[in-house]
Length: 251
Image (cartoon, rainbow, N blue to C red; front, side, top):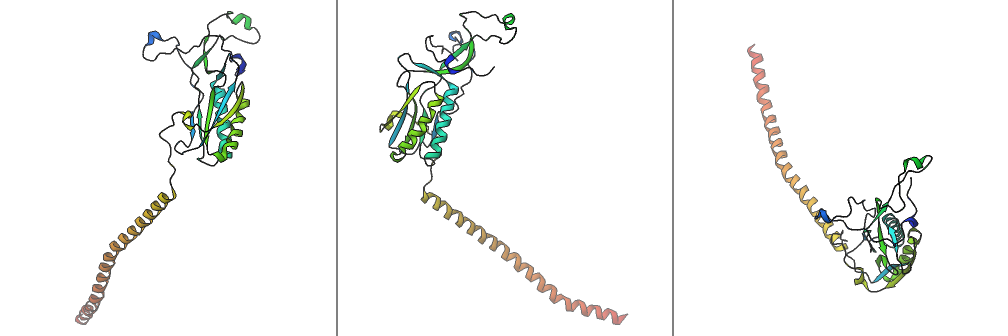
């Protein structure tokens, strides 16, 4: 059986099911939790100083809505790919603002021919964990993007591409409150300046020149020794010839 439609799990009428205790097992309500399908929550360059923030807000009414983690991952992928095409490299920072804490349950039943003989379901069963979802309210931020002001419109179009991946209406709000995005990751690849690159290049060339000089100094004494041996051999050749002639005369 494939993945069921999102409308089967979008309602928030039931109470939240999130109680999972790692340290105190007797307070644990949930036996096993499925893994999170949302792989990343921070993308792009978090070290650059941007001047514009764009927030993707939900339009879901007063009752709220549930968004599954696979829908969050799908929206994240399409936004990130579109930003990479429309905005220069390392020219944006994307952050997912929600986390799928809620655990979804389902009473699995057999389907198909003869399923009535196999299934032993009930109308109001508790069910077993099958996935994760995030509970959201109206006008809640689900994605935020930091860019420079000149790329604000391109980033807005990129964020609106996620409308087809989210089971509710969305709108984009553009502002200048950069601090509202919260914390950023600390361990991010730093962008090297041109001066640093030039300094590294000069250091590399200097190292190569020193290596060649060392090789020349090491090969020079060896060549001198070889030349001295050759001269001695040449001097000894006439003496050897004379000794050979004397032996021939004696014979």
